[in-house]
Figure 1 (spheres, helix red, strand yellow):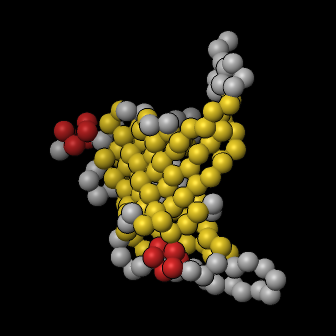
Figure 2 (cartoon, rainbow, N blue to C red):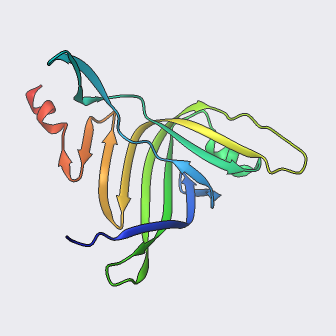
Amino acid sequence: MGWKDINGAVVADTVYCDDVLVAKDTSFTIPGIAFATADVAAMGTMSVPIIGMLENMQLTVKQIGVDKGLSKLNKLKAQNLEFRWVETVVKSDGSLSQEGRKAFVRTMPSAIPDIGVENGSATELESTFNVTRCQVYADGKELFCVDRLANVLRVGGKDYYSKIANLL
């Protein structure tokens, strides 16, 4: 049985919009890949993924406070966002290290968030975006890349859309 590094807590994170820092020590959700499915007959009905057809991808960013970062993030135009975060990792010898993670995301506006204000509480805002491109790296290695407008679907280094494109 081999050792698997154990990923721990996120130490810090930043969010950049078109190369300008807009949020720090915040929370965000990078979208995963959800395939459209089709039902086939197999001892009843079975849903199978349609590789190359994806469900809508959405990104959320939570911010504390109404500031310039909020206005920069929530423009009614396509934007390029970069997310950086650092995770603590426990190695096989018991040592701790920090590893960088990055995500590059191209978005289209989805909604400008509600602003709820309450005395004695921080204002927390959640911005939601539709994603046209998402590329995620862990410790310098690409995990996946989806570019819906350029027909790119790469997971773990394998290009899943190229065969489809070659058949067209």
